[in-house]
Image 1 (spheres, helix red, strand yellow):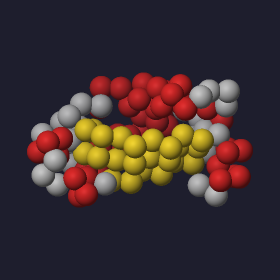
Image 2 (cartoon, helix red, strand yellow):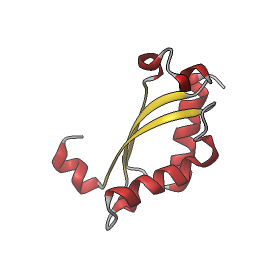
Image 3 (spheres, helix red, strand yellow):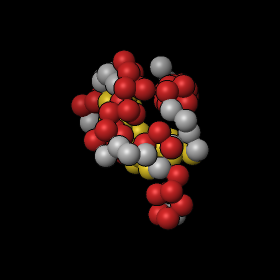
Length: 97
């Protein structure tokens, strides 16, 4: 799977599982060249997810929602590492995310 296909997969899965007000997906795989996960073919990504679905949830619960949405793509050969910033719309507006 190519890097652009992985980014598209992340976008699709998060869009299907969550009500998105904003989604940014950054491919940071190039920063991890030679890393064990990179050698296995998995990518490294950073996401900013702004969703009202996070209201009332703590950080761990929000991350679980994101990981659950991505599901089986969280394998070393697809997505090796995922850095998550998960905010409600109100938090994003006050944070200038």
